[in-house]
Amino acid sequence: MLREFRTQDWDSYRMDFRNPHQEIEPIEREMAVVDAALAVLHEAGILPHTRYDHGKLLALRQAVRENFEIPWTAITPRMQRLIYAINAIHQPRVMIAAGIFCGNTFICNAGAAVGPGACYRAERLIGVEIQPAEAERAQQNVRRLDPEGHAEVIAGDAVDVVTAFDGQIDLLYLDADGGPGGGKSIYLQILLAAYDKLAPGALVLAHNSVNAGPTIAPYLDFVRDPWRMSASVNIVIDPEGLEVSMR
Image 1 (tube, one colour):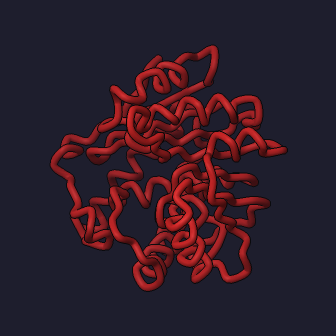
Image 2 (tube, rainbow, N blue to C red):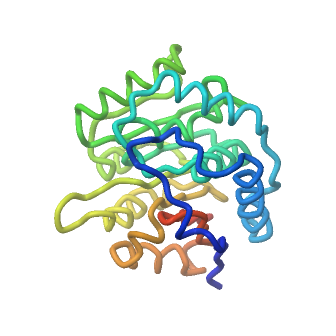
């Protein structure tokens, strides 16, 4: 059964992509929206509970503000909090983020395990970016928060990286772009390459579930098929959206 959580203001809640640290709404409203989304994910059986450390999220947010070079981003404060909270609650041993650009989306996920937002210790945290220059920038950004190098950045094609990966994956984050003619349709290729490596109960997060909906329709059909994924919920808290699915 298709499930969705949609706020009334999802389309009017907009950010300036070139001002990633802009405060869009009172923090209490942001927290309430994300808490409501987490409750739906818990009700769907995707998350075991809804508790996470709000202070650690704010510490991560401040560290990113002070240390990251972000030319632009579509990750809203609500989405940053949601992605961080899902990782903090699920606590994946192995997390792979595909399409991390300058590293902001990567640290939204990995920040639950490294830096000032860390609440657990992961075994492997891998960010993949196909553009070498952006992979280098992501590496530099992440190292400022994770000088020990627990979170690693790979310059390469996410399909190839996931195909070659030896081991189980506990959380797969998708934000890659297949380029002209492909775009976000690459999500399904990445998921298919990872599918047999997803641990029981593994989560798959797909950004742009709303604004890239037609492009990723085959992906959405796949994750919403109960024979392939045990649950999937579309979280619509901003114009981009996040499809959260469980193996």
